[in-house]
Amino acid sequence: MDGFMMLRSVLCAALFWCCVPLACAQAIDDPTRPPAALWAPAASDAAPPKPARPQLQSVLISNKPGGRRLAVIDGQIVRQGSKVGSAVVVEIQDTAVVLRRGKSLETFKLYPTPKIENKPGASTGRKQE
Image (cartoon, rainbow, N blue to C red; front, side, top):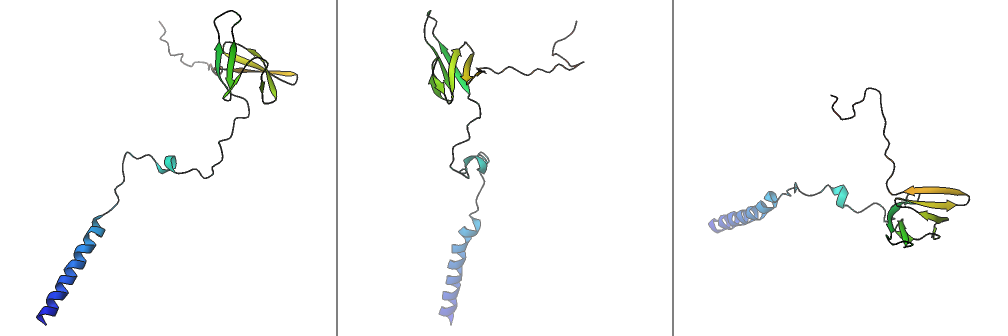
């Protein structure tokens, strides 16, 4: 009986020591890890929707007289007379491009005009003397 009790206590101790690491090993959240929404795969593998209007991204104008004028619209390099979708590039200016769609002209600016609202009594950020 003494050998049986010894074997039983050794087996219980071995079982206990095998289970201890499982109980202690807990996942620790990394505080520097970005939120799951940022690194999780997107629900659909479809490309992001393109904006309804073409987007003027850049303008390149040579400083030599009669030099080339290029624009980048939706990632496509265009010159005067080139097509962008169903529109034709009519003019490339310093900060804008004019497109003709049928009979109408559309101007796309590199820098959109800021919307400034002047409210009566609003501060302009300047000190009055």
